Length: 322
Ligand SMILES: C[S@@+](CC[C@H](N)C(=O)[O-])C[C@H]1O[C@@H](n2cnc3c(N)ncnc32)[C@H](O)[C@@H]1O
Image 1 (cartoon, rainbow, N blue to C red):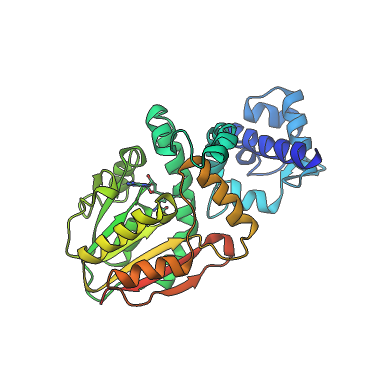
Image 2 (cartoon, rainbow, N blue to C red):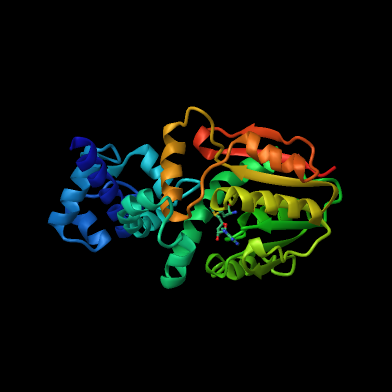
């Protein structure tokens, strides 16, 4: 029961801290219990119990001046770090409810409803999920720019499942001659237009709301991004999508895939993610060999593989169209 009770309390406390913006309140220095309670709009008894527990699990420390963020808390859950994953806590507060469907999904081999169907019923989910993906993209973005060079003279990029738009924005900034088309479900694009306007790139990056499986993406592309999208599709749909990417890319064009590759034996993170996907989308993670096989069959060179550091950040596959 210790393995059930303590992880439940740890996750619940971290989510509450995210919802109350408690870590952000401690960003500029330690606070006593009354100061902390006031800063997050909570009762003193509640803020005290929550902060005591967060000290016990190592997310806060207790100093002479009161509660303070631990270094990793400041790094990952406040505006002081380069990436603030508070949006991940807010998304977990929502997606938590999906885990009550796990037993049924295990019995049936698929969820009653996919995440995307649930999002249509709960319109507030789309922006929260996209904000979480936005944080991921801030984390991953520098790796993409450092490790991937687009073909010389590249002008047209297709960003499948491009959501928040951050990757298209980063590459359009890096390559002044580049324009991008983002295809994603309407639920994922609610904030993107505003982000593009703020980045002053709405003339160069256009949105095509829709189901990417419909294949309505235009053609004549120099580069295609398929970033963290394959695990949301079935194997057969990925095979078809990659085949279609092969048709819309020019010879010598580049396809960049970001994925959490599976392998034998499964590691803990992969096994947990596969269970999440069973309950959310009825899909799974794929191996390098599976993706590589679909790429070669679609007329690509054998892709190169870059495993990111830390390992939980996933892997990149870079494939050139013959
Ligand atoms: C894990 S997120 C990745 C977002 C972004 N590419 C990134 O790397 O940060 C997966 C994205 O794929 C989109 N997506 C999944 N299935 C889709 C489909 N059938 N048609 C269009 N978009 C889809 C989701 O809406 C979501 O924005």
